[in-house]
Image (cartoon, rainbow, N blue to C red):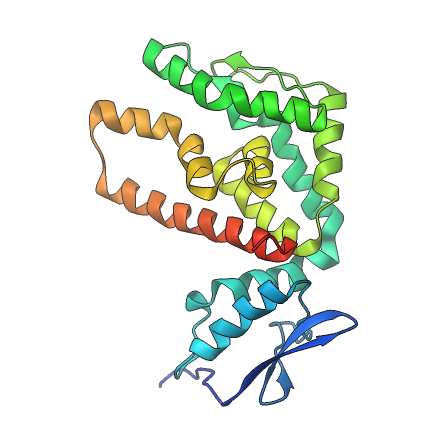
Length: 238
C-alpha cells in the first residue's frame, strides 16, 4: 500500500503582517505547525524565507527540504511551551564548555586550541563578564557561579525563535561560548564550525580522513550553517 503524502494544493503564497507578527498564507489559508498552531514569525526576513520554501514545493511536501519551516515549527511547538527548560539545557553547556578542555600534547594541537579558543573565552569575559576556567585533559573543571549565571542570563534574553537556533548552535558545537559568538555576530558560521572541530581536524591531518566520519561532519556543518542563518533571520540581521 502506498503511504499517504501531503501534496501541494495552493497556487498563491502571500505574507501578511498582523499584531502577532508575520504570517504566510497559502491561497489565503494560514500555514500551521504539526500541532495545528497558526504560524506567526517575528521578522519580515524570516517570513520571506518561510514563504520561499512553500513557493518551492512542486508536488509532495517534503519537510526534509524545508529547514526554515522545520525550525519555525520547533520554535512554536517545542520551545514556546517549555522555554525555561530549553534555556536551562542550553545554558548548562557553560559548565562543560568545549573551549575549556585542552589537550596536554602534542604541542601543535595545544597551540592550535589556544590560538582558536582563547580569544573566544576573552570575548565572553569582555562581553558578558563571564570568565571561564581552562583545564587540560578530561577531568571536570569547576566554573564560577557568577560566570555561569551571566551566561545563563544571556541565553534567557533570546526569543523562542532565537532560542531554537541557539539550541542547535550550542548542541552541534559543544560550546555555549562559541554558539553565542555566532549568534552575536562575533563569528560567521563557517569560522565557528571550524573552531569547534579543531581536535577532529588535527586528528584527521595526522591519521587520515574517514569517509563516513567526513559525511557525518558535513551533515552537521550544514545544520550548523542553517542554525546561524535562522538566528540571523529571527533577529532581522539579514
